[in-house]
Length: 151
Length: 261
Image (tube, rainbow over all chains, first blue to last red; front, side):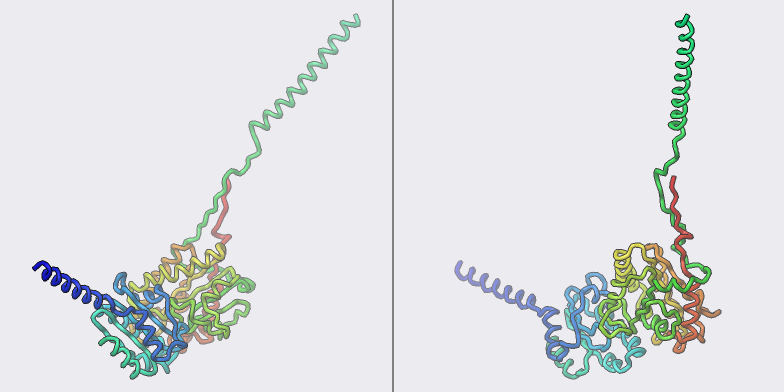
């Protein structure tokens, strides 16, 4: 009897453990962003931005994003961009990203109009705990990669 | 008898000697009582009003610009393209976002030098900064971190490198129009930026150059003849900007006095 009880408890604990591992093994923003950049062949075009710059550009409130990685053309010559933002409030993050893209589009229209099309077709994919944004020439491929990451 | 004759003479000499010493002592006493005043404390008073705009002054001599750096976004590019002040250094980045100041390359360089590099390496003592138009579409609270973190960090760097440099924060003048931000939002957003720029100037004891004062018409917009696209200066506007700058230079010696007690 005792043996059965202990075995059951052990099984339950293992299952709980599995569950916890599964939830906690969510891929980091860094890994996902790197994957997108790599698969889109953007490694030579965009670079990883400092955390403070990410916060400044998108004006994220304190604590809104708990893990973020942003790659962009820091020279601002192209609009190419890959951002992965882990958050408990995807709606708020999506809203901030939209604000940024609106502002970016207006500036780009004035100084670099050839890039506006890409901004208009930016991919913003909201998941349960993250938001991914991609601006790239190959929108179709970008869409597939982002879709696979947010399944 | 001989003794009697010598005694008064001796006494007289003694008295004279005493008097001479007394006079000398008296003179020393005078010196001790009234010593030459020496400064024991000096203070520097700066009477300049850092909460206000730079006031009008007589046009500065042209050699002043040997020691001037103009740094800014595309609006500053007009100084490079149309300017007549040839002895000043002008650096600009089109579509400059202040958060990318250390990565976006200067338009007028081919070596990849950034605006931050230019500011960090300049040996000029009078630095004019014109930033803010490319972020104008953001919400009000955005400008708190924009100004008091990012812009502040640039001022800190300049001050650390050259504590005595004169820094002029140039206000964001009122464009006739800007895409994606119609009135009255444009006026409202300009208020967000300029109020922070004014605060920065006051907090950091640097000068606030209010371009609206010299370049706008009766409606408060930059004069139509100064700008081709509603925002960027053409030749006429650039010359008007130069004239305004020339007649709004703070002479530190007018305001900063050393008082010794």
